[in-house]
Amino acid sequence: MQINSPHFKENARIALEDVNLQRALGNLKAGFPQKRAIAVSRLPEFDALRDQGRDLKNHILENLDLYLEQFESRVVESGGHVHWCRTSDDACQTILDICRQVDARTVTKGKSMVSEEINLNEYLEKNGVRPVETDLGEYILQLRGDHPSHIIAPAIHLNLEDVSEAFHQHHHRPKSDDPAVLMREAREMLRRQFVAADVGITGANFLVAETGSTIIVTNEGNGDLTQTLPKTHIVVTSIEKVVPTLEDMTLFLRLLARSATGQEFTVYNSLSTGPRRPGDRDGPENFHVVLVDNGRSDMIGSEFQEMLRCIRCSACMNHCPVYGAVGGHSYGWVYPGPMGSVLTPQMVGIEQAALLPNASTFCGKCEEVCPVRIPLPKLMRHWREKEFEKHLTPRTVRFGLGGWAFFAKRPAAYRLLSRLSNAALRLMARKKGRIRKIPLAGSWTDWRDMPAPTGRTFMQQWNEKQRGETAMSQVETAMNREEKA
Image (cartoon, rainbow, N blue to C red; front, side, top):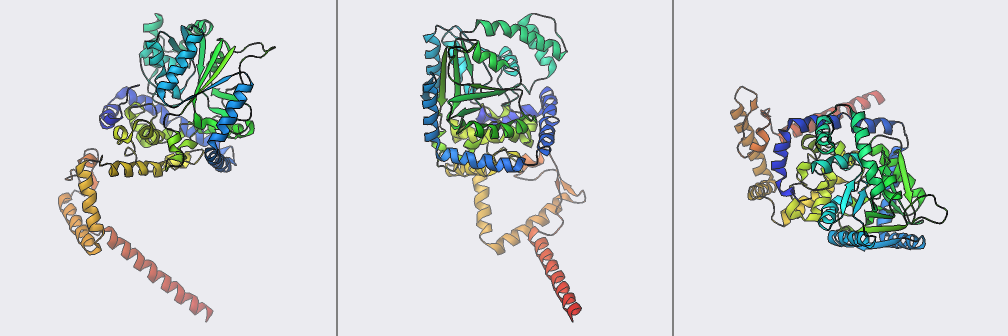
């Protein structure tokens, strides 16, 4: 996937004017947030579980090397192989080498954001291996030559007619507006791919150190067919997904489903522990785990370490007003929304992704709903600071901040400027009570009018409030004394 993050503003303008996209995003606003709220209300201990999840993730990150080494040893003991890959290129080459070892021509894939991150599909196609996405949303996007716009609902930016058109063009069947018909059509087309595949590639929601197991959670069952029918199963995932025990894994599963889709549990929770053993009725003959770093180890011990707690539930983007307005493609890379605004600068560089940490109202909803309590607004502020330090912010912004700092350090001058600005804005509003255009604030007033100031500055109103509270306190004190007397 090409990095398009430097064009966030242009992408956002296009998204706001896209009628079909806005209709599709309306389904998001009416769906996941309400379902999450209902699911959480049915679990009184949910906030306590969030605290446990946060603390456990912090412990894991402090001991990440030990748990990863334990995981590797357990995988090897069960007959599997672990491959350590520092970069996207390393991971893609490793997966291609495994495919070539078994002379693979076709691979089936479960939904994996890490495979999107490393651009795996394009790499395999260039080297003569045909990847087939089996998650319904990913399959639709592959037919359209499109990319995911959401990490758990990849085709959420599409409407029913978009899917019908894609199926009509590629399946050569009549169009239908019946979701059940389209589902059966996709199932029929994918069945033959499952049987023909030489290799199955999945992601992993978690890696269990004590058993060497990987787990995927799905609602379609395509992941099970992907990892059990082919002779070789490749798990491609990132290093922070490891958890110490199976019991720890269940804690995160309780948080994940409720935060993601509002389910108490996902339909399929499928564990893989090595290749097929004697007596097993199905399963792969070869089992490989490809662990991708891609800049994550650099986050350990940094101000961004807390981001590695993320369990990829998408709650932050489901509740984000910016994502809800412009969709995932506007962010210009694999990870959208608040979590992408922190991860993308780390992985592609703040030079290319400086606009993303600024694409936030800082309403704090993302932190409020995060199942592992990641302070996303704080982390985005850290990126803003780095952007400023590298002189990546526009000159006008730097000049404005410098001017504000000059007056903020001189209270008398600040109060005088506030009064003068207040008077000027009231004059601009005249009798309308609002201002349609403000110099140097066009990005704000292009889309909304600004209410006219009341005539008193914030500091004046604050001081009046404080004096009123002081006077009220004095009256209450006097009355209490009289009562005691």
